[in-house]
Image 1 (spheres, rainbow, N blue to C red):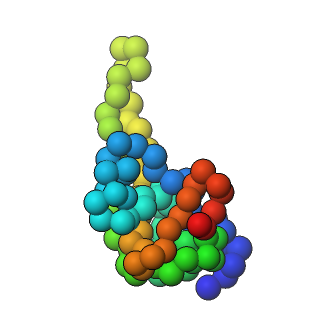
Image 2 (cartoon, rainbow, N blue to C red):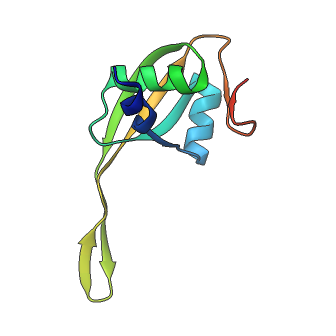
Length: 100
């Protein structure tokens, strides 16, 4: 896979109460990824950027919500998130900026 492409696959970690709960319970980390990312690309990107070993990846497509803007209505963008399951003993610490 092209290393330049892998650097663009991950957009941001998803930080929320649900993401923290999933990280504690299942050892999974949630990332926002680009719309056309595949599981092997996400796995390779996480391993390249954070120097960890990835066990598995699950991907979910999130539909954009309908929202009102004044009198009119609009739709937020669809986006994709990836649940990354690391091997036991592996950890990503975002506070220090990388692998622990």
